[in-house]
Image 1 (spheres, rainbow, N blue to C red):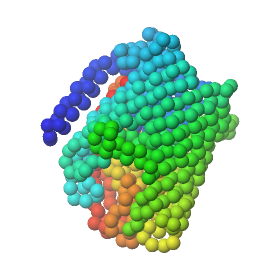
Image 2 (image 1 turned 45 degrees about the vertical axis):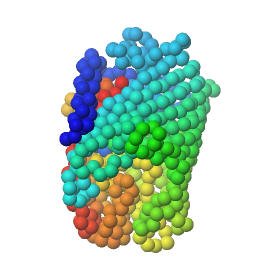
Image 3 (image 1 turned 90 degrees about the vertical axis):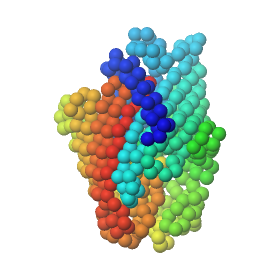
Image 4 (image 1 turned 120 degrees about the vertical axis):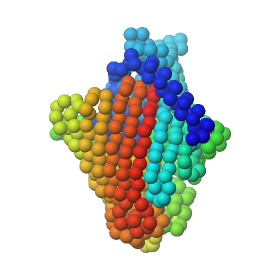
Length: 513
């Protein structure tokens, strides 16, 4: 292990140890958020459940559209996937504070509605992959990241938010890390927003670099598995009523270097825009709490590779997402049609993504039994007039394999799961997934969208079986420890291309304030 790795791990361990000591007195829940109810083994953020079919936690305010369903991610123990979605005004009451970190959550400047909130996260992690890229050769990744955020509220309408991130990755056989994995300093978010209320209708506008996760998790996600989050640049506007909402946006992505802020640039070659809506379905229907989210998006990229051709692609997404709870059942269903063109060639694709589970008992810690069943069309990348490969703008890339071996392109999957809570602070999730490719003449695809060379037209339909175990231990509302284990058994579609089975393991600690 290199000297830099040793120093990084010592620093991470030291800070986490100090954080644990500070948080022992805060072992009970802080904040108004409730834990999500699905806890799939594929969750990106165990403490915040950035996963399909996760029940978003209620927010402190209830003006207009339910705050749990406006595309900000779930809130757990007061902490959100999007840190700017948190509301810490209650920390103005000294009786609500447990330590000095709580004081940093609400720093008034002159009057109560002008205040600063400070936030941060430190995560240390070790990944081990046998047969990295499903070839010979082991990989070990020693990773840590540090986020620091400032949220300045200038009255009840105007807010300025900024977030810095630093990511370090070292180890063995790691290749050349991208800027999302190794980055000396990244200005991860920087935006201004303005909101106002007209009765029970909220209107708002936000401009700048920001996290955007308003949509199905398999299509748009923070990608917490990376060292840095996926953020976008541009304009977002919204209007939220009691039962209806609309979110309009127009974004470019980022092109990241490995150095400081100066080598991270706006990527105008990738543009993402559209509208996401929301409808609160009547609770009297099935005694439920359900949301229906229609969406119409456009993604334009100047260079997308399908088969041997890299060319401009314009892809449209039109779909519906139905999610929420019906009695003991939690569901997250998405169907979308994709169309457009790649290098002037017609594009027609479909995705149907269904996740659901059932609570087996009335107790808060009762087991949950569920499954997800998914279809993503494929074909045409290696010949044919029409391209039928489905893809996602930037979805949850660990949903089908922690080792980043699979993605919802030319894929069909079925995976039963079981969630257990043997202790109040421990969550254990088991999942077994069968995976096939839809079109045998097309390739099997990795999580980054690239094809496994030699798989197109070779072997059978069976891509892989994946067995997974995840254990999350929430020691305090701020500190969580996570263990992930995975075995991928290569099927005939991969074996005929010379690819092998693989084992994956990860252990990481995350501390938030």
